[in-house]
Image 1: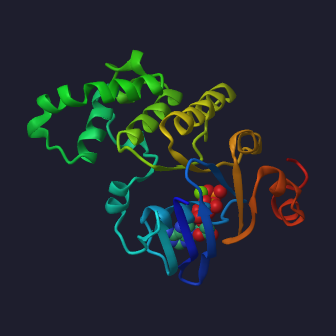
Image 2: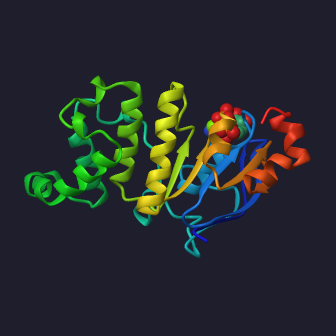
Amino acid sequence: MLLQTQSITKEFGKLRAVNHVSLDINKGDIHAIIGPNGAGKTTYFNLITGYHPATSGKVLFKGKEITHQPAYTRCTLGITRSFQITSIYPKFTVYESVLMALLSHRKVTLKFFSSANKFFKEKVWNILEDVELANQADTLGDSISHGDKKRLELAITLGTEPELLLLDEPTCGMSSDETESTMALIQKLSAERGITILFTEHDMSVVFGIAKRISVLHQGTLIADGSPQAVRASEEVQKVYLGGTA
Ligand SMILES: Nc1ncnc2c1ncn2[C@@H]1O[C@H](COP(=O)(O)OP(=O)(O)OP(=O)(O)O)[C@@H](O)[C@H]1O
Ligand SMILES: [Mg+2]
């Protein structure tokens, strides 16, 4: 098991957004967290990355407690969430953006930019090829298409060399073609780089298409967890969420 939450809880004032969620995330899995709007999916992710402190409960990564570790420490350990590229490096090229991500992750200062570039060149190209952005390497971040921005977002994320990658609605706003290629890419990253993927998604065809395991949140509470077949068959899940459409 790679990550474990033990009875993790997050309260915002009187609202309990995440309610005693105990869950194991297995290494190498593509694991979906689903549930209606406001179910607590994003908040749960924020408890894992350390963006929000937990009200109570524990988070363990590779068996070590990280509940009180700050977000940057968790990132150094290998827990990464996808970044919003639009707010990061729009004036850098695609190539430079990925290089920057690698440099900041390895704590290389810009003083050594040119020697670092030589050192990391191969890694950058490797990532760009993986996400199929090599042909856009010299294009500025803000002049590529929406779908390519999402790919760049993933490329930058890969620059932090994640072991556990959290993707919150990775196909949001994409056409069905873009959705399909993004999901194929996520499967490739999982298979070839051995990255464990935890993702949220509202499109059930995407979820049931690639998830090996699915956990369902409803009003902050985990109401089902298991194989796609088991979750689809759960009466409670049908009642509160899938409603017979899946
Ligand atoms: N920073 C915050 N302060 C106060 N309440 C919050 C905060 N973040 C989330 N909430 C509340 O916590 C609950 C869970 O929200 P969350 O964003 O985790 O749901 P979600 O499952 O990600 O929903 P969606 O599918 O719409 O993205 C909601 O009622 C939301 O309004
Ligand atoms: Mg959300």
